[in-house]
Image (cartoon, rainbow, N blue to C red; front, top):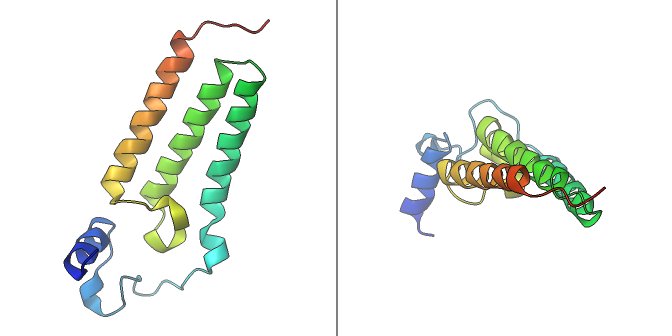
Length: 119
């Protein structure tokens, strides 16, 4: 990614790379790397819980839990600054939000129309 693309991505995430701070907020302290991965770990934990529920043959609850994890990731991506979300920032903010919400909605629809196979 060249400098122009990095500036564009930083602007789409609400940072101002022209202020000389390297895209970091004005008065915000820098977050340690391990702490910036906490939202990612929470989302992965919720995804793992949903997969375990699906493996236990609850085909309506499992996708609903996974969809909730995706909506949690979208919420983190929407409200947290870029240096606080770690690996959840993959693309531009609007692309990440659109992808996460679309997948969550599709999983909710899947959970709604799937037949209940467990007793």
